[in-house]
Length: 270
Image (tube, rainbow, N blue to C red):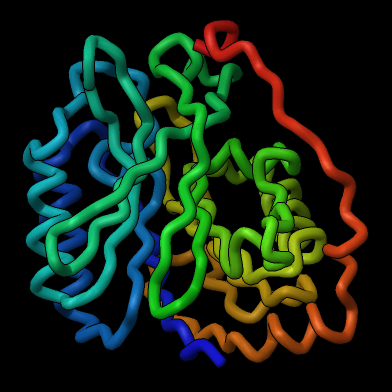
């Protein structure tokens, strides 16, 4: 049996397009908590807010990347969050998965929020990422990806196992659509028989969009096991792998899932 996994979500307001202020605030919050955790999750574009201003872009190994590397090493935990990255002449809403030893993986947001003109500012990713932590297979995703169940689908591998045990959605999800957020997080847990965690910000951004948090964790049956409410809060949840084993053993619905392939025109999304 795999070990239990401790996951910490950071629900906070963000300074608009002020990387230095955001990193300073987050660092203070993290040190105040004296966290004992395996993974810390930050909101989408945690160093700037959800902006399309390409002047906020950094390069890989830039200031925010180095800050993540330093914090992961000092806290001895994995740190995950997204920021705007410029690479090869294109811009990405890129989730960085930073490990304490300084090695990292990344995922480029697949579904770009066209209602916010994100598809005009960023280049869409075309590959999912699955990382391993304490034996857990984890699929990190970003915000608008939550609305697309095919991309989130927990596919059965050739060995008969499911692709992931936990999916993460780091987000800037507006207050006006919280019903969708709550409903789809629970649905993703139930249909994929996996733990689901969504981390969202609070406050108001530079476009006068209001966010009320609602960061939540769901077990594989779709029941909420942690709710951060609407205030600034840091919460650590312990996920028990036996909950996955028990459900998949007693109710192996995943064995009857439909097989499919994803076909898309990446250029149409950028």
